[in-house]
Image 1 (cartoon, one colour):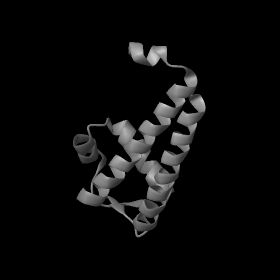
Image 2: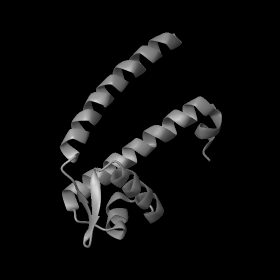
Image 3: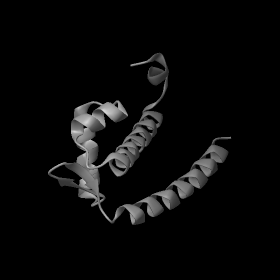
Amino acid sequence: MSEKQRDRNSITNVAEKELGLLIRHIDVLRTVRDHGPIGIIRLSQITGQPQHVIRYSLRTLEHDGIIKPSSQGAIITDKIHETLGTLESTLDDMITTMSDLKKKLK
């Protein structure tokens, strides 16, 4: 654990952890979209993430119906367009919320 992480409180750590998880899921999704069908080992090589982390992201994305397994590896589903649109809108809302939260801290 870095000194920076030790200096932060649990609320900040949770927020950073969740944001990191979202970033990773999006990274895996983009890689599947751009390189699919693709397996765990290749995903790990491209993203630089360990295989167990890739496996978790794949399970999450599959559970949401955004990707599906095939005999050649993970592939995207038709649900990707809807999901990316919803995600973009959600991120816009989050930016507004975070800006409002920053104002409350002052």
